[in-house]
Every structure is written in C-alpha cells, then in structure tokens.
Length: 160
Image 1 (cartoon, rainbow, N blue to C red):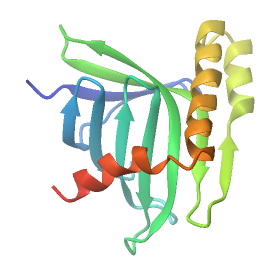
Image 2 (image 1 turned 120 degrees about the horizontal axis):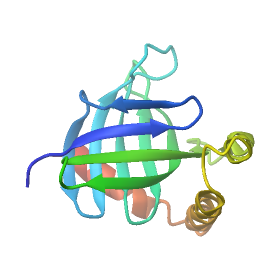
Image 3 (image 1 turned 180 degrees about the vertical axis):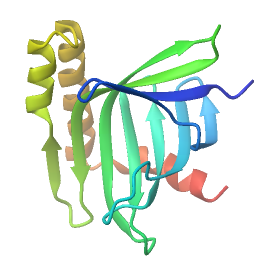
Image 4 (image 1 turned 135 degrees about the vertical axis):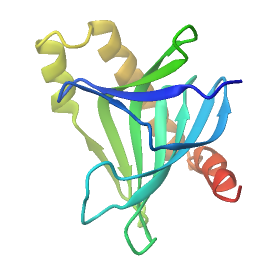
C-alpha cells in the first residue's frame, strides 16, 4: 500500500493543511497513527502522537510539552474523506473537541463554533448531527472507564 498524503481540513478558520511532516506509524483501513511536531511554536505543547479512528469518527492525541511530559489527551471529532485516485486522506475537523487531563478532568470545547459553522452554512445539519452523536459515543466510552481501549494503540505505536 502506498502511503497516502494526509490533510487536515478546518472550517473555522477555513484552512486545508497538508500534514507533510507527520510520520505515519500505523495504517490500516480503520486506523491511522501518526507522530507529529506542533505546526506552530507553542509554549504549552511541542509534539504528539495521534490515532485517527476513521470508522468511529474521532482522533485521539497524546500531547507532550517540550520536557516530554504528557500535557493532556486531546480528542477531535472528525470525518475522513478518502480519495484512492488522488491517494489522499482529508481529515475534516467537525469542531467539537474533548480534552482529558491527567487528573481525570474533562473539558468539552468549541460547541459554539459548531453552531456558528451551521449558521454560516459551512457544514450541513447532517454533519452537525453526526458530530454530536459521535461526541456522545466518545463520552460514553470515557464515562464507562474504557478510554484506555483508545489509548492502547497509541502506546503500542510509540514502542515501534
């Protein structure tokens, strides 16, 4: 299998970024795991490793600071658009984010951006419904104490 070109599509702000510097560690039809450095210099994060659960609709990222300490786990609600002819995978960020802190705290982010994107007709009602249902399914996994099932493939990929 030829390694595809990965892109991240955001609606707010409107951007399509080629993730050309990300290293693909694992690739199968339902899961892509990459390691990456922050695209823009930041004081709080330096690098990370992300699992794109293409069949589930979320990306789970283990985020590190410059001292190689875990800052948090960051989860994006996504939809993947694969184009075999162009050999591309576009990961569309559906705006809802969940941050899981090491102390067990959870923060849900950007619900207002989801509403803004719908009002501005940047996304469809079906995409909003999908994003909300997907975020709910991810929260159910977290609340059931099963988030480790999503973390484990990342831990395994780090050992490669």
